[in-house]
Image (cartoon, rainbow, N blue to C red; front, top):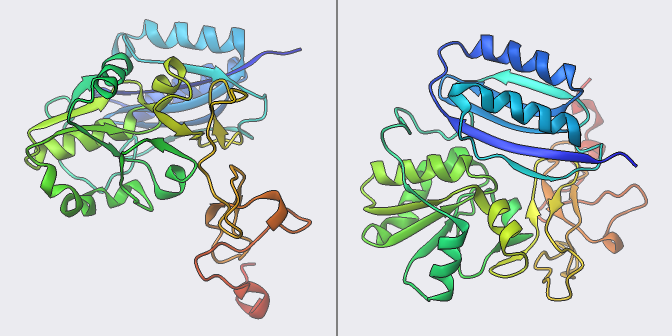
Length: 299
């Protein structure tokens, strides 16, 4: 049986020629038959790739040889062989779109806190506040207990989060996200806006879950590939399912897209509430507008 692995990593580092890096990455990924998504920008690199275990190991070896990416925190998890349909490597202005301008993370960012340190803070009942910087649809399937959920529809809404957090300017804050790339940018944004004691979870939630499965992070972790959710020790009887079907309220971790052609919002819907094509309308007031107005459908 073939053993597939998924590798997740990012690095904020100055890239003088993003297009040249994109071409080099395209070549090595194709040579190793890797699929997935990668964003390259002048501020760094952000990627999730899947391939055979030996090819993933070779890719990581070659990546770390590049002095720009030395010390990159690489997260590896089990794959399926079908996590991604193809390879996509693009050059963008940011490695994660934030809606924030003029933020140099080599100069302004939060302090790193490791999974071990955060675990100790939680057990010691230290006063601090975890702020979850993921999108709202990611948070519904899993989250840190007692964390502040940003409830952003998209990370580009980050600037709108400031009023919600202004009462924490003098408090200790830990920003968290899936793999670290968003919470690192969010921590720098908070520091730039006057928050005095800001930390970011090094390696993101996936690193914490790997070390402390089914402890402080409840539920499962949403991931941006065909697996949709992942966790560690998923059969552990202590594991709690916190996701709720938007249609009937039953416990579920089954994500689908709204069947309305003008919505396609991602939401949780249990198997009992979907039709024979695994489709349903989301809870945002959608009606099947596309069927009522076929003249408006895209060609």
